[in-house]
Image (cartoon, rainbow, N blue to C red; front, side, top):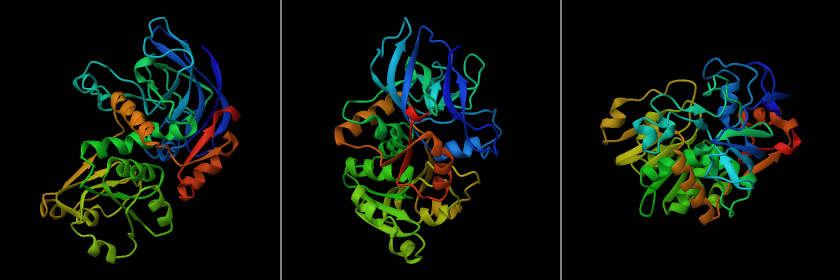
Amino acid sequence: MPTVNAYAAPSASEDLIPTTIERREVGPRDVLIEIKFAGICHSDIHTVRGDWGPQQYPLAPGHEIAGFVTEVGSEVTRHKVGDRVGVGCMVNSCKECANCLAGEEQYCLKGMTGTYGAVDRDGTITQGGYSTHVVVTEDFVVTIPEGIELDVAAPLLCAGITTFSPLKRWGAGPGKKVAIVGLGGLGHMAVKLAHAMGAEVTVLSQSLKKQEDGLRLGADHYYATSDAGTFETLAGSFDLIINTVSASIDISSYLQLLSLGGTLVNVGAPAEPLPVNAFALIGGRRAFAGSMIGGIRETQEMLDFCAEHGIGAEIEVIPASKINEAYERVLASDVRYRFVIDTATL
């Protein structure tokens, strides 16, 4: 079993440290990927710190992976050595249930295998992209089109698909008014994608601090939610609201911003429950929904869409030695808009 360099958390309370992790040998249907860039997602922090439940340590996080294929198994048909590829939030599923057969592997009825912190098919715990190499079954490896650089492509594997999927499902496009709550790692991608889809885009952020950025990224309007007048001004305005923040917000107030039959989709995952006033739903036939990443087919569609429209993430590339500092900056909302680790520094 090959040993590779990585950064991992020794426990829920300690900083990530340089270490080595084991990767399985390349099987008949496996692809070995040399990782070039790995994005830092807020969920990496939640997971390694035990916010979403106990973990097995040491744990190397990272599910926004971009790199090159360096070896393929004897039965691999989808990828070849030298291909530019990516891996997102999952590395396996049962492939047999109704959801998997429908191309919605993220909702596998037997539970999809997360890229890190999950029990893999061989009984080991998966380790993520804060490492130099990863071995993944070919069905869960996507092609990164030539039109996107690998560093700006890495965050598309989580932040991109997490926002593309609900925008597409709930019909963001010409004639639709879409609001994005939060302009962070997920939010900035949602703005770019909704704009490219042809929707009229409004950003709802705590303050006007990032207004210039929001408008540059494709927003038509920008409002501060700390201003109580915003909720009066925008009442009944939107067909679709995508909530990207991973903090507890007053969902009922945001539901009032929907037009008749509108939907608020939660993609952020706060550790605390989000209470909802039933009257905020039934008063305008409004819906409160959730969405989790996207299937492999849809992830490829998203990458192709981004290449076609010249969309990549706004990133700050860091060496591995700055991962812990980056975590603190993510928690302080001090990143515009995604940290990406240069894995050559591992």
